Structures are given as structure tokens and as C-alpha cells.
Length: 449
Image 1: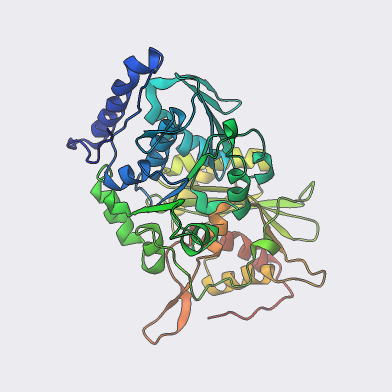
Image 2 (image 1 turned 90 degrees about the vertical axis):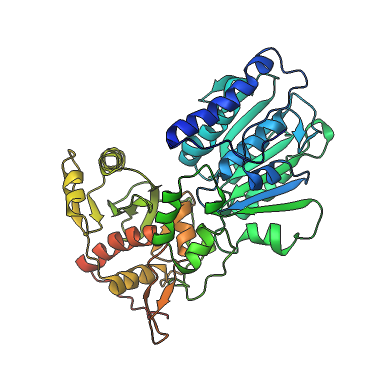
């Protein structure tokens, strides 16, 4: 039976996490390698995770705050499905085929796959990294794919699908994957794990349209509900996040953001895989972060000086020397001419500049003029095209566009951005305003409050 309470936590958190992983590995070692039989995978989970893992609905969602163990819960449910279990009932035929997805390949590799391998332990008998295939001891196979190009997800019939961080997907990913749940001629199961990102397709699918239908199930958890997470981490987030963004990221609430800074932004207009075969210049914007995400955005300019956001690095808990190494790699890959950085950390800029070929400088941090520079690029020009296009792979930047808000002063006026959930927006502003300062645009756009 799945545990609904975690074991006692040792004072050393890393020792505790190692112990938790060892518990899971020890539970499976003998039975799994002997062939499985009627083996039922188990793993320590806290109550909200357990309720989600045990849900019998065909379509289930674990909507939870950052650090809540969403990916662990999704991994446990996937592991059990590969052995035929939905809830505590052995429903699925085995061996079967399942698919696990994440918004981008780096997110898939660094978080989703890593968590799945930690959970499944010695039941994994084959892992083909180049093809993204994991085989378990009972013969079930799991395909690991990114959702960057949704049409590429079409293919063989599957018994189950788990979508991690699904709020960052395009809406059509859900429709494509639901159509694949037909292995052995039977209706399969799907579940997603995610922190909300506004009231997008995820809210519409699981709350607005199907909340009372028996085929759908939603379990929620806040960041502080996770007993496996050190309390000091949650406290640092509670100090850093405010308002609607805190309610979304920590409390897992679906927020209808009001007073958006960029109402001009439209996924239909500004999001595109298409880009020029060559750029006249490539630059980058950098916003520092440790507890909050650090962000590095790579932007290419075509011959008409239209900007294309072509690469996003968005990461918490990455040290400055690691960021400098990333900057060097990206500089070599894209031939980036300049990194425009948050000027508040001059020592960080020096570390960037210590890398051969990297040229970094403190950006102009004029907030309102910088916002105007971004706005001017979002507006359609005479040819009915905007001056800024964003790759669909820049999933965090797209999410911030749809939640970046004005804050209210004590007189009720919205006169500056809310300092929360703005890390990609700051990095983008640094880069695009640098272009504005060098050569002002002809377009003047009024700021909306």
C-alpha cells in the first residue's frame, strides 16, 4: 500500500532524500529483477500526492505549487501504470507503452526524466538516452518526449500518458495525446502535473468545462504542503513572491490576471517557429536569480531589425559561475555580440566577461522606457507584422507575458510593474531597450494602466 505519511525526517535533508530514494529502491530490487509477477510498485508520498496517485479517473490532474513534489507524484503514477495499476486496481494490460512529456527537452532531461529514474530505481533495465526510451523489468516501455513540436507527438497507440508542467503546453497537445490512448483497443489514461499559468487551456479543461464529470479528477497542493521540502526554502519564496503571482506559484490557484502590462501580446500573432536563415546581429538579455529564477534570453535581429527570441535559459538555484559557463556556450553557439545584464550585480558581469569571447555590460534599467520599447515591438507595423517574434520553446517567457501586471500605489494608481514573476520580462526589456537607446524606433505606443 502507498504511504500517506512520510517517514520521520532526519536533520540532514540530503541524508533524508537519500534515505527516501533507498526505500523505493529496496522495495523493488528483489521482485522486479526476478520478473515482477503481481508486483505493485510503491513509493513514499504525502497525503495529497497519495490521493492523486490513487485516483481512478481517466483524466487526472495534480495542480500544485512550485516545490510541491508534482513531478514525483507524476512519476509514481506513471511507474504504477507501467505495471498495470490505476489507483490500487490492476486495470491496464502489461507490458504496455506509455509516454511522458515536458514542455522542452532541457526540462524533460533535467527534471522529469531525472525524477522518474529516481522513483523507479532498479526496475529500469534499459535506458536508451538517444532515443528517449526506458524499459522496465516487466517489459513495459516509456517514451520521453518534449512538446516543443506538437505534431511530432502523433504516432503509435499508447496505454497512458503523463504530461509534466502541462500549463506550459500548447492547447492542442492535450487533444493530440488523448487521441493516442488506444493501445490493445482499450481506452487509456492520462494525467498532468503542473503549477497553474493563468486561466489557460488547463483551467478550461479541468475546471471550467469538466469539473463535475466523473472522468475528470483534480487534486491540489500548495508548496508548503510538501513535508519533504525544507521549510526555509518555502519561507524564502513567501518573502520573494507577492500578490496574484504568489497565489499562483505557491498556492496553485488559477488566477485571471488583471492590469496586464502587455495586453498587446497574442500567442497567435507573436509566437512562431519561423525565423530567418541568418541574422544580422544576435544579442542576449540577462536577469540574475538564485531563489528566484535566473534568465538568459537570446535574441536575433533580421535585416529589417525585427527581433526573434530564439532561446531561453530559465533556472533556479544556478550559481553565477555556472551561468557564466552557459553564457560562454551560448556565445559560441549563436555568436552573441553582447549580453545586456541586470546592472545591480557588477561582480556577476565581471565573471561573465572573464569568459573568452563573452562581452557583457550593465543594461539601462529605466523601467517605463524599457516597457515602451517592448510594447513598440509588439504592435503591428505597416506590413501587419509585429517587430517581435517568440519561439514556442520559450515557455516561461510566454507564461510571464500573460501574467506580468501593473502594481497599485497607495492612491490606487497603476504606475509600475509588480515585482514578482517578472524575470524573463526584465531580461527581455534589458536587451530590447538597448536597441532602442542606440537607434530610437519611429513607433510611439501609449502605456496602459
